Image (tube, rainbow, N blue to C red; front, top):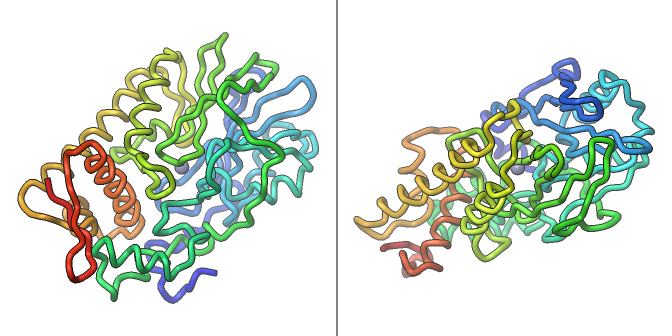
Length: 341
Ligand SMILES: [Zn+2]
């Protein structure tokens, strides 16, 4: 369980109500269920409800934190769908805001649960509670986090958001799997980087893309460090591959639908490249630990979640720079790893 005494004020859940939920009909047979999130940002997550020949499929389900299931139950009610008619829950990836409520949804609806094949992760290795906290503290010291700050960096999450029940899927999705719905067939396309198991869904006849967090509408991408060899490279490759699908409508995991997917995907790619260039530029002067780089990159912003996320992204970029021969790292006598060009 999370040790609440280490929880900085800006990581405490923000109270939200089930009535903060809204539902949009995108097309007959496709709804966007916008569920409130107990975070400062993002404040909501988009789940999608698809009509099947018999019953409904839910794409993502929101967090386990309150209002949790109450918000999703309200959304289903607004869509006019009985919980028992949900046959399938497909999670685009395993981050708490997309999949945290999965165990409850399965319990409440009796549906099947599926997700992509790959590691069972909730967060980067420094914050994933499946990894013992002592191991995470050791990794934190190695990356230059001062001992007195370790708990706030490796053991402070939004209350119990990453401590939800993890459930095993009925089956794993793989590339090219098809989800047959009343609106036609949706193809499963892997899009790792943001999370190693992230997938997007592409409706070929309409060229619509349920894009999960691939092209997150924020200046900063989130990349999950430590589970695969090169999340940054995987993220860029996923954007490039999915741009080639030439989608006409992008239905993201957060925020509004996007009518110019090529532009949004291009912006997401540019944001990731800019981040990498900024880190490379910061390295040119002197060797720096990942932690020191993060403090420079956030420019004094005290927001813990941003700092923690930035550490994961920075480590992914440094790993990529090292793999491609643009940077090297050395561990000093103090046990801290520092990077230079
Ligand atoms: Zn995510």
